[in-house]
Length: 289
Image (cartoon, rainbow, N blue to C red; front, side):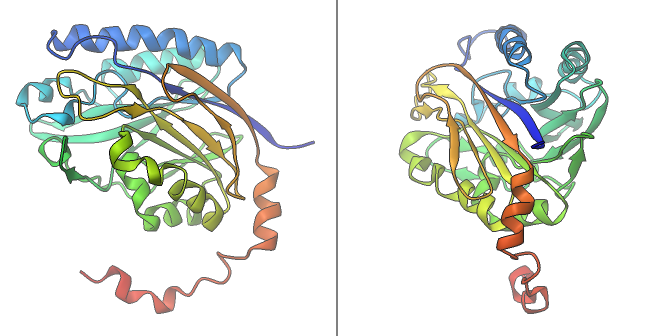
């Protein structure tokens, strides 16, 4: 029988104006996602991935230190603990992107990975941090990730995480494949005028080059008062042949659920032996500063 894994991606618009108290903003988005997580569970999802820093607006559109108070510990923060409870309740692995506080003044853009039994399996920290005008001032908020490219064994699938701007860099995408990832999730926050022409090029290319599935997520809506552009949704699943086989709408909250036949990975890699035919002995210049 096919080795199918059912996965869900959740894209959502911000729930509360960013000038409201931070705890109320966070709670409003968590409350919204509780219903969507339940919807994914009722659809039979074994893995669900949330969007980049899912519990608020894309605050990197401004540079204000008040957002430092949006951070929390991983795995000991309230949001990770809540998601562990939900994972146990629904028997569903959850990828939880949050704003992580390692210690005072040391913050990361992080995704916690939780197994179907509620166990905390580890985290990925966003490696490549943009500082792009207008409105993507991420170096003000995040230190570059320092955990490498971990792959998390769920028992029924091996998954990796790559966050938003990371997707522009093929090196980490390759490292995830070499580390054994069968599915790579990319939770994002990106706007139409800046990146839409790349959205369905880069990640299908990573899927083809590395012979794995990709789950790409983007939030929706235009967030006042910054109005840096339209977060255009269109979250999707892509197979190892580069085929987008399930896609969310552009302009509304949506839970996208798809069946990923992991047997396709072996079939594709038996034809295209990209890992066998690599020449790492010739690549030294790529990692020289």
